[in-house]
Image (tube, rainbow, N blue to C red; front, side):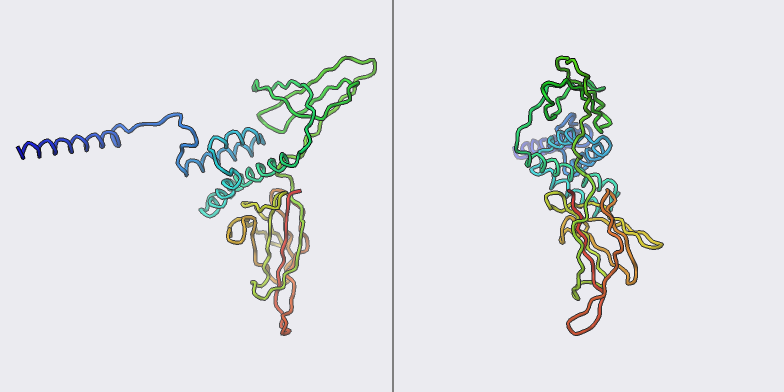
Length: 297
């Protein structure tokens, strides 16, 4: 009887083992058409990188938002900024990290514009036909009621080239033509909003500090900073020292060298930047630093 029980137990264990080997190695279950939210964390990062690359190529922010919503991130902007920092820290290409950071900046700028627009706008009935067969209704300020208007707009997107037409009853006078001017998209050039001389003996000599902010004064990671001088050029990025801030970057300047600093994505140019000579309370001279702040309008 005991031998019979042992035989049954061994057969059961052998069956379980063979079943696991078959299901895990020989014929594992393949999942097709899974939702992005069910992806593994590293695959989600790849998914966001692809969305960021598509946004850089097309400029279609609503489509990027719709794709990112499939991941169900609690805060897509913070998630993208954190991914950009991880990409820089893991020595991935700066271009891909900059694409992710640019998408985060665009999303944050778009959210800011939506939150500050408090007054409702009248939306004329317009029909938009594009080469993809999609139909959408943009928002424009209403034209004068007694003037027939033909609006023609070519959005910057490579995927959507649309012709927008609205016709009102004909008038006896000549028909004026208006061309709408879209608002500047998120990611417009940064302005140099601050320049300070820092005389702190506790900081490294000749420390150049750069801070990059969005319109809400939140720091932006992954922004390339271009520094040039007579006979030399250097690039460095924000976000590599997250303990000092996502939008922080620094560089050690050399004495008696004049630098020019600007952001690769477009910004005001800081000219004639040199490390200042400072004096400590006991009368000793040392090399001070400069702090520059760039912010999107």
